[in-house]
Image 1: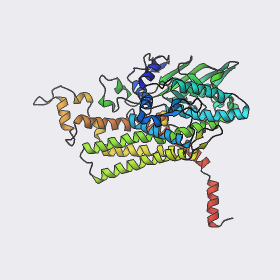
Image 2: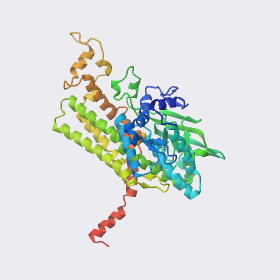
Image 3: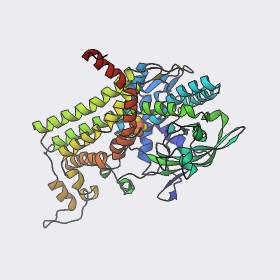
Image 4: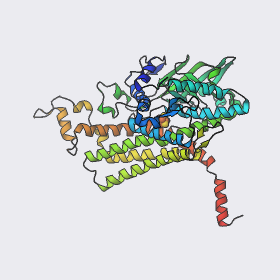
Length: 491
Ligand code: SF4
Ligand code: FE
């Protein structure tokens, strides 16, 4: 099958019977729901850009399994060049959407599961890798979106999965049957789950023998029986429900999406199982998925950062301060921080190496350093953007005021005329243009898009401490001590 267009992708979602709930109610037509649609448009861009000959090299790849052309989001990395192109593709999409485009979690799950199942089979003689390859060919050939679901609710963080008061706080095998397993539990803050055709579920932490039933990895369609999603709120999300909402949204076309995904006794046939009890491989799968997603942030957040820097520069220009040396220096600092993140994304890709399966993986230390920086630099970038923009980004009247015909002035001026008079900028832009820039910055710094640019930078792909644990493990302090001893002359 040929790669889908963005419009075909959106139509394909209508055929799913995914159960979605929001504000306590079932949403039947979630594809056209004003709060959900921007996130669907965003995923659609991963299809649209793949159709554009200009972006073909980044957006598509050749399947190593079939030799057919596929979307790069379904690719198994075959070289460090593939790893770098992945990051470049993500930067491009961040630039085009200024949002989380959601499809990377599936790509990162494919690569983690592909390499890990190969090693499980080597040790235990299981069939997981073959199962996974068949599944992946189906996904590649049909150009589908898959949600990579890792984060369990986790309950009391000091206790292992099997030791929780409620057995469902980590996804588990509830029943084993000759033809498959029945799974129960939930995955939290799942990026793009509603917009995905399928889900790949993985364990969330390294596990011991008592957690055998929790060491489970499988694929299931998003509308599998027993599965449902409860949509996550975002700051200022109900602005999207306002009539004629546009400027006040900051980014009316695109957005991200997260949901709670519940598995209420879902049957998984044998062919879609990629791990079922091999607890000693849970840690490897988690480490690889997290590593790939930490690399991802060196692409996607950089692309969004490019737009933030551009918007801050526009705000300065519209305010007539673009020549001030302090403003120029802030833009330089923002660029420096953003490109540092990109350096990390490219570096961990360039230093990648083949796994036992032959697929390529990033350098884990550098990928964790990448994500650690992402937990900090976007915060400094938005701080500087807010500094440059000025307080107007959070005090400005609404779009409806700017367009209002209601008379308020002594001489018959309307609310719209008054707003336009007092919020004028340097005279080279319209007040509407100035307003659009301010609302964009409001959205990205503390509105709906702040989920993707700020808090997701902190907690997505693992919170800062998770990277510090990996950095401690990979940092080779013993080797460094030896270097010091050799130089200093300590035997
Ligand atoms: Fe992709 Fe970035 Fe969103 Fe993760 S946060 S799914 S890497 S766009
Ligand atoms: Fe993310």
